[in-house]
Amino acid sequence: MTEEEALEFMESQKSLQVATINKDGTPHLSTLWFDLVDGEIVFETFTKSQKIKNLQRDNRISCLLEDGLVYEKLRGVQINGVAELVDSPNEIHQLAKGVMARNNPEIPIEALDEVAKAMSVKRTAVIVKATKIVSWDHQKLEGAY
Image (cartoon, rainbow, N blue to C red; front, side, top):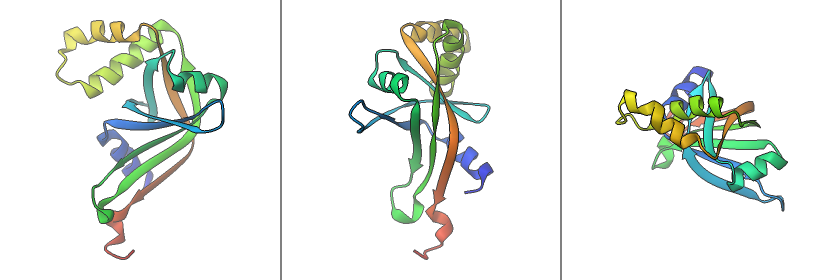
């Protein structure tokens, strides 16, 4: 994919697969909702979660967005980078509001602030600072595998 196609693809996705590194060196995988802020992946999760504990020890992170149910339609974007951990309650609140708005369009705009504020308690936000982005789109193979 071109950079523009990869960004459009990322914007169209809802679930983000996140890989961090456990204390013993094995990968820890989880899936969560995210937002894009200035082209960067942003998510928030409980501060006591395994992924945050891992990122506090080793800030390397990989993220995957993918779709397609048959081989010739598989598409994806993998982002490798480092995690910037955000622990300021005001910043977490704002980032959580973006994640909530993007993934819960049924929440009325007037209620969004309170929902995000409640979601921000006991949470840490993560901004993924990409060092490498890889993408693929099997639809472009036109049957030639």
